[in-house]
Image (cartoon, rainbow, N blue to C red; front, side):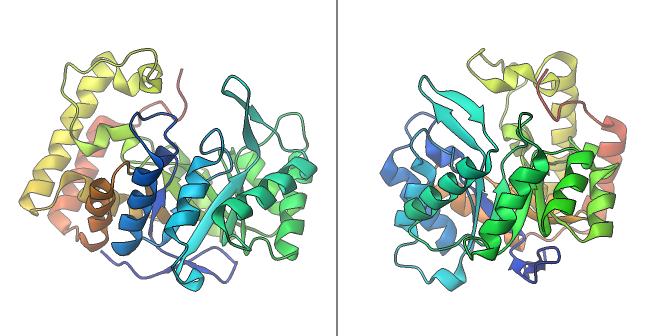
Length: 324
């Protein structure tokens, strides 16, 4: 697996092919995530060579993800890090999540994020999601101004349609977009990937392990309570779930043949797909961060590639970029 830096669109920056997605360390969806655990998880990823850290203003009701990162990087050389953040979503009392794309709110969130991270700039700043009440052009223009002021080196957008991507690209110097993508969720290959390759916009993929499904540790009788968002996805229920687990066994067989953990092969494959610039994996412990970081050295031979492609072709495209 080639772990050299990759071009971040037209920004002139270089980005590592793997990054730590720092939503899990916020502790809002996982129990037992303490501040100490979060800091240690980030530190372990950095020590393992994962210097691309992806966070957001709303990762934690009070910015727990950003403050943990700030502590973990305090004694690190800033020039060695690639920090990506997002603005445009915040929490209101009662853990109510609100999308807010007003320019003044975006600026306030970015400034607070920088204080939490204890840095003077982000390497990549995304609009976390379009606000249906605000013209996307207005939100993206404010991110462009933040870039001009040096608070961000490059601008991106997350969770968008192709039409929204086009609008964003006309409103600022757009370098990246962040979307879900994995072996089972490949909808963006039909429209967004070709457009981004043509326009020189980098794609950063999240959910490469599809909420644990492609990590290969789910038993066939696994069910999800209503408190777990996975119960809303067709791919985690009924016949779809069983077919997906059949596919996981195909990939597991190739991972075993290559003497690699299954997640290594899944992450490496995702990072090698045309148009995919960087892949984000999550971790809730130092050990998990170190294990996932090992994907940097995973080599995929022709036999494994053919088996995975055949399995995907048999499986077909699975609905589920969003829950039902």
